[in-house]
Length: 104
Image 1 (cartoon, rainbow, N blue to C red):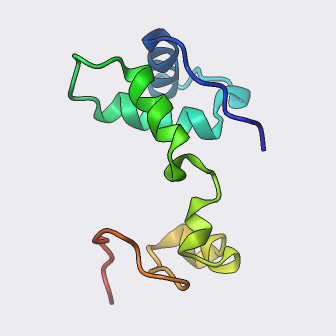
Image 2: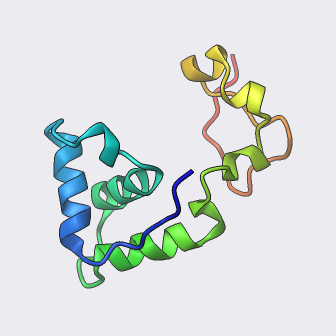
């Protein structure tokens, strides 16, 4: 895993967001941090706050760790074919927020 290098400007976030949308973002640029940056870019509502500040704070939090999902799901369950096709509830512990899982 590569160490997180903080973003220094909104232009970096915009480049990721637009690159994602127009499918020009190089594969090497599609990092764990870029996933967060893209989500922040897609969901940004508060334009008074720089996007890169929000992204850096999120990446510095426990949710910024790429393995945070393994706190809730076992590796076999999280990376299973079934999990790629449908929502699977966590098998280690309950999420700290409501999930939108749909039981059959």
